[in-house]
Length: 245
Length: 317
Image (cartoon, rainbow over all chains, first blue to last red; front, side, top):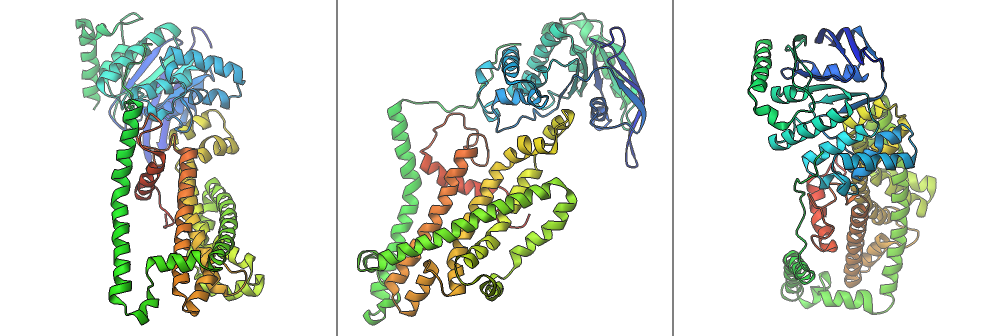
């Protein structure tokens, strides 16, 4: 990772699906340790941006430069394998990368503790609640200690209480490990709480409209949400989002 | 991160005694209604034998006890029927085993490329529409009237549900999981062995169970078609009906039905054993503990559920 450089850089990246332009030229540099949220209306191309970042999609124009291959990807759905136990789910990616059994087992025990699922290591996902499944999904990527984390609305399908709690847990994790993050969400509150920078995206074809540097220092406490300064920042982002839509 | 304190769905484990009482109650609740229907059926049977039919026409429907007596207790008939059952069972299981291997391989091939699927799918459907009877003279001509021809009949009629259910399972693997495997450069083989095949297991077992039933039917019906060779249940049925041995005929029918039920149950239990711990179609939904209802009972329940909500059983996809 180039310290002081960028972890990932979008250079006038466009994406078309057939005749439909999904993404207008996007220019974006994400520096090491940054937590960048992208917020925008449904169907504006936020997820496409992440798929491009991961390499699952190729840009129709422009280029993407990524300085690390250690990329974690967390989807909106937990995407666990129902036939595997929680532990074996968490070891999946390491298994695919050919990590040896012993290292895998040690690492999975460690991340299971980290996300508070150690008691459920031998359960199947069907025995877990929605929030726990999401933790398992997060743990699966954490095991490989990614330098760039891509989050595609990971908490979008959860109820508000669970969502806030997981926000807090992700905050703790990020404050501790400082993996570079690109986080897609619909929620202004979530974006402002977690991010060092929030970008507002226009409706399709998606363009990055406004950027907000979020001034609060890490680690942030959940009570930050109730402070007037938080409200004013969130208000500004919400207004920009309104304008974009 | 914080320690988890979200509730997990879990049935309250009661005391041991309470649980047994609960099981008994559950068993009675579940078994009593069909048992009453069984009794009613018996009553109707007796009524027809003794009230509807005169004595000289009673051979059309002899009463149950006469069927049991002449079919299983007296003379060589019991042995004859049992031997017939073994012959038919052998045909059915060989046919099913071949159909399973063949169907599985075909489904895996079809899942690998759209063009293979497009090439083979119509023929799989075609197989389903073949009037077996029309093939019988040909099969007899080519393979004789013994085991081989019968097995082929079983394979033809039980192949389709295996192909279609397996294929359905293989191609319905989660998109996100596919993406994760792509991101980690998984080969086709890894994709198959780690994602598609394990994910398809519940569907594979549904196909297997349906096909097992069909294979049993095939084994019995093939006897009718070929009309000679080892005496399976089908040939016995023909023989008894020609000789107007209605007690023996009915006893054979009962054995054939029992065989069908047994095979269906067997694959139900097998499926639950293998995928019941995680599959929503095969396991108790939202179940966390291993024992909610007696195992044997659950099976009956599950059979219904799987039939109702699972992927197509034998029908076209």
